[in-house]
Length: 381
Image (cartoon, rainbow, N blue to C red; front, side, top):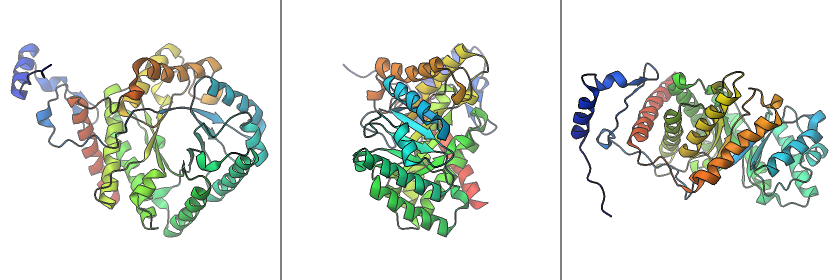
């Protein structure tokens, strides 16, 4: 089979001009922000530099996530919920806590859960001392279960205030990381929670710039402690939110990859190993009291996350904005969306699904370049 003969940009524009019957192509632009207007027409001649693929894996498999609010009084209830969710297909639960769980509480939480086969994540603690205490208790819990902790994979989502950390803070972080990695070598302990920067489509450039700034501060600080960018990337996970602006969200995820690769390249030329992506469909993209509409919005956002190639994806339940008050049915439906995408579309087996889309690649470049310029301004303030 021979390839189709390509058409020049001029040929396409002549056809577009004829079809528009006097209207200008610019009149169809989608104005996302004052800085960003997206043309419906894209051609490879407009892509001066092909920035992707960046961080492309051999496949596109991701882990299905779900969050669990855990505190001392509901450990047994959350154990039941966790087992039910695992039986229904989740692969990467996140345990959200406000205080350190004891060895006994961890044992009860993970009763009958084979945590050597599940990517378990923790979040919510605010000090390195609290994280250290949790680490010790979690290690003791695994030893009580006679489980080899070096086989675990998952992460401690320690969202430090990287921008305000001092040299002594980074020294403490390095000490913690060495202790952490001696027990859980496959766990990730560097984390930036970019969900707090999410402002929807209209704030996308600012969101990307702030996320890039936070990540760069972590890399800078840990490099000063003797870590290489590769070592940091292998221990790093980046959390961020997406909405239902389908093509824009795909491009945003790919732009984050470009921005992360730029940071690593600046610190160590030739190195483009980027952190793992922890993606959340934002409840802000849902409509109140509209479960049916939210099914569609959540599915659109999930497809964008998958095509953009994230490492872990969490979809909030469709009936409420607070996951801890959601119905079991809507929580299960959110999980099923990801399962259907895996089983029916096979996108998990397709490396870089968006590659070759001139529109998305051009949009990716536009987002990355504008966000990088804004990031540079932040570093100069």
